[in-house]
Image (cartoon, rainbow, N blue to C red):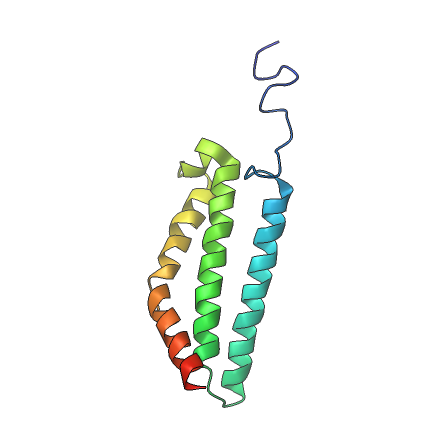
Length: 121
């Protein structure tokens, strides 16, 4: 039997809690993305109601981009070296999500907007 298939080989052992392939990481990523979706919906609701929504929009943007980056990072780690090969969709998702912290206002600028609104309240 090849070493990669033998019982006890690293490939057949379940991931430990601290390892990126553990289901807890997927759970955390899903929770973060759902929270980001709710923040975005809250900002959209504020806008539709004709209320100021700059702070809520900035919060949603920062939170969503960071959680999406974390989710893609975990996905790349789960795939191991294959996560960096352009034949796998996870590589494209990882590359595409990295730009979300830059366009439509860098995350640091969004944090300044949030701080400005919090200090004004």
